[in-house]
Length: 68
Image (cartoon, rainbow, N blue to C red; front, side, top):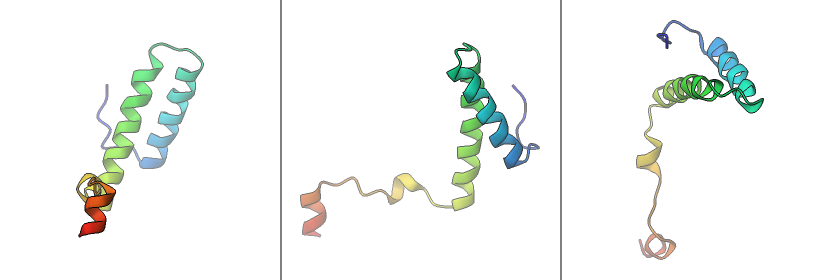
């Protein structure tokens, strides 16, 4: 694949949408390409937020959360 750093986010989103549509139409190779672009979009958005969503998620049981 190619280096995605130089591709603007709107173009990256268009590419991801295009390849996802192709995958939904049955193209066997399109699924991996769509995933590649979608992963880059998620990576960029995660770094923009500056928050690790996994660390912010409280996975304790309801009973444990009520106790504290």
